[in-house]
Structures are given as C-alpha cells and as structure tokens.
Length: 96
Length: 143
Image (cartoon, rainbow over the protein chains, first blue to last red):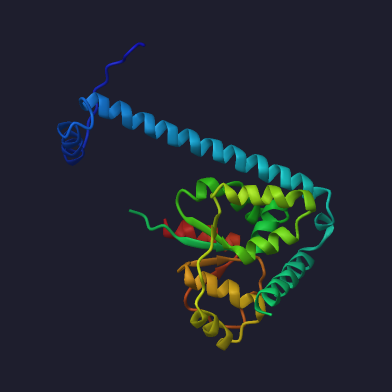
C-alpha cells in the first residue's frame, strides 16, 4: 500500500482531545486516529449516498406507476378531496 | 450552529411530490435527502396511511420501503388526550385533529400542506401552516 504524507492544521482543542485518545491507548498514534476517523467518515458518506440513490430509484418508480394511474388525470382539488376522505375514514376507524 | 427545523409533511405534499403534480412539492420530494441534512421532516402513521391508500396497488410496497430509508421520519410519538382535546376545543374536524395534534406533540415549527383551506378556520399558535413554496421562502429568510 502506498502512503502519502500530509500536513494538517487543527484547532488547538481538537488536537488536545485527539491526543488524549492516543494517550489513553485507543489509537497507536495520531496518524492512526486520523486514518480511523477518515475510514468511519467515508463509510458513513457511502451509506448516505446509497440511501440517496435508493430514495431516487423508489421515487422514480412510484412516479412511473402514478403516470399510468387514475390519480394522474385528477385535478388538484379532487386529489385533496380524496386525501381528506381517507383522513376522516382513518380517524373513524381508529376512534370508533 | 444553525437550528434544525422540524417540519411535518401533509399527505398532499407527498402525493403531489411523488406524482410531480405540483412543482414545489416535487422539489421537496426530489431533494429530501439533502434537505434532511439541514432540517427534520416528519410524518406520522395517519399521514403514511393516507398516502398509501391513494397510491396504486404496486406502489404501496415501494412507498413503505421509501419511508423505511428514514430520510422522511415516520414518528410513532404517542399523542396525549390533552393535546387531542385542545384541537377538538378549537373546532377542528375529525382527522385534522390528529395531524394538528401530531405537529404540536413533536414541536414542529411548520406543517406543509397544499390544501389552502387546511386548518385555516382556526388560529393555531404552536406551528405555522405553509405551502411548499412558502416554506422555501421561509428557510431562505432564516438562513
């Protein structure tokens, strides 16, 4: 594995807190802490990107279904009216 | 640090956003992942059910999976009888009580709805009711 040396500038308090973690033995040295933190961050970012991709895929799929449905031909007021009817029915079902 | 705003999306916002029926709700649904990093967007079981019942059969499972991603937060907050009674006293009708009480319970700042008449007959101080378009103007003002 190739390594690249980088210089970073940190706020004093962040450096102090990081050093405490190294001193407590949670990381072998400061570079180890930075590598580990970056891995966690990239993993989280990857997770967010995957969720976003799935969100878009599902939204587009529902949109396609709706294009071919009766709902697509309804005026706005009618859609709101149907939702209102569903709202009242659900309320009655739950509070009967 | 910027305050995270709690926003409840009414069922019509979701349905119009999913169907591309109105431009601003579509922008919200298309960008909810990015918007959700700045603010919190909620629905409750009632709103979920309203949308689900109005979707074509094949889309219901997709909508369940969509909500399951957690980008749009499905809250199961228990609503106390006191909050329900508060909105009954204000004169709200049937299901509207559940939505207003939910927004109140989670301390939402905004309830987004494209229904111009929704809750307009009563004065609610706890949260503001905005259309998606008004919401974008509001967050531009705040930030």
